[in-house]
Length: 457
Image 1: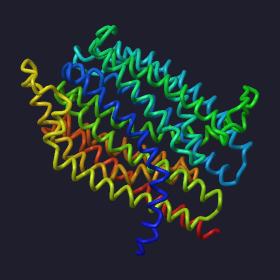
Image 2 (image 1 turned 60 degrees about the vertical axis):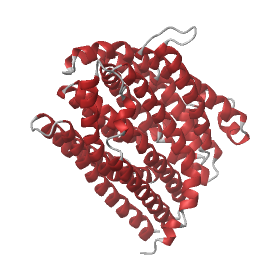
Image 3 (image 1 turned 30 degrees about the horizontal axis):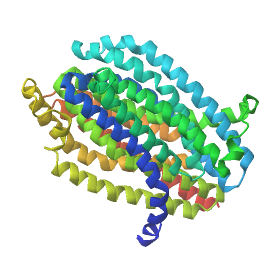
Image 4 (image 1 turned 180 degrees about the vertical axis):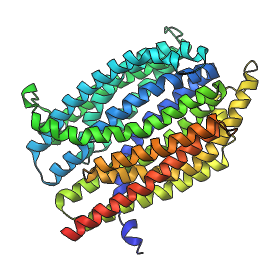
């Protein structure tokens, strides 16, 4: 195999992907900082924030997954230099994302009573309820923002979202510090301060993104003079046909990790706090694969519009190869520092909670060891999903992800964690099994489709 043809694509892959990665990484880092700040209050508060966020993560997965439908459609229209179609994709996509954000907020609000029926520790549930109320509201600006982001990404202008994220993150960290601990004139709100910081920062993010794009000449034909009359059934249907399966794919994966949060809560507070530490770290490294996945979606979408299917396969494989190299490095980092990473999330000087904190650190280090290996499978499956979305192939991948995660992965997690002595590490063994199966099947699907396009051209 001549690897040089793939290495030659690395420079452009990095140029396209790094702003996306930094933007996504910024979101996750702020989430990690939230967890660190809340964790300093106590392990119970950390578990409560984890439980509340698990509901919101499910909703975000649907919203973000749905919004990815815009990127390949915009990339395709951009390759054809078709401004009217690109504008229609954005206007109708923004309408759908706004509607979806409101619906998801309403569903989360209605689902809040489920907290008391999930077998979670009572002290965790009590703290989680008010936290959930505030963070759920942030879904509306968050998913509206996704319409702008995916549109800009489809135009290969990936830095806009990076700048929006930087501004949002600075706002979030500052408000967290002021509101959690009651600095200066601000009230001491504890973990609720982190929730308000999230809500306000997401409002800042959507406002910045809107005005930033409107000021740029290349975006004016798409954003200026938008009216409700531009919302058309044909384009709504086109976006929805891609968006619903894409949203479900994201939902199946995120719900798998949310299920892990719930399973760890059924084991106990120690397991739940340890799981949140491992999840925070894996979520942070996952953003690199997510950024590369968007790059794959953009580049494959462009090549599909240009009908250069040989190049399409080369660029997709080059991004997959980059992801594998990067994630081998992450795996080694997790293995080497598995005993030290958990200490960042807990107060080592807390004498009152020392016994619990020591137990959390021990369990978390075991989870990080498993996490080191499952990341490689995870990066392959998410980048391949991006390439398949670029081909606008979403229905079969949706089935593959459902079977891999929920017929294979989660049952393994349930059995090992609740019905054997493996405990919390069994949850992550199940995640590893599901993601590995998804990676293999999704790559096989891409291989078949790309060869079909090449042979039929």
